[in-house]
Image 1: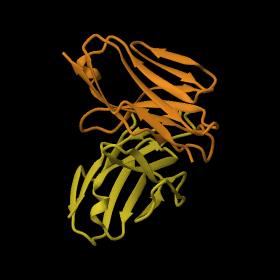
Image 2: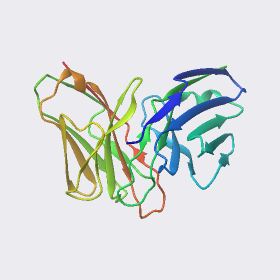
Image 3: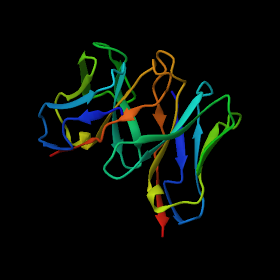
Image 4: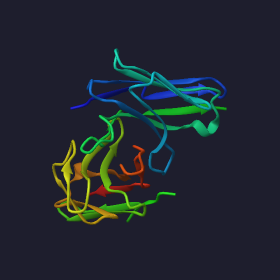
Length: 115
Length: 114
């Protein structure tokens, strides 16, 4: 089955600096890569995703890049703010066709923004 | 907004008890999932369901069972709770018909087995 590794497990950055979280996956058939943010006391929430036919996707201060050849993808947060402090999870999937909706999650990164 | 609710935020049970965790979603989603979340291990899939009365094993089904008698409700059952099942349990739902792949999560149930 799919195996997703995520690094680092903890990350502290000064407010206004950038943060980068990296993930690798093992299943070459995976084609959908979402990122979830989990705030304290809440369930994870999707913040951005990318499909394998795209190399990069951006949404305001967050961006995700995908290198299919190397089987790795990364989350980039620029101009970090205190509300970015949370646990971030990457995930991989073979896509949302019947039977393939399963997500395999990474182990999570606790991001702390230092004011 | 999609809403996924879980019956309890905190639960304390004794070893050997039968435990029911309930999850309800209000968006008519076909797919529902149960995960457990442990520090350093991320989210691991226990069971999922594509439709009423259908269920599929996830990555760590041992010691658990599920029930889906109605589309909106997905129950996780610990037949005989053990201390190694102390964890945060998260329910999620999704739908293919919307064309989006997003899973919507409930707030979680923190289960302690003593």
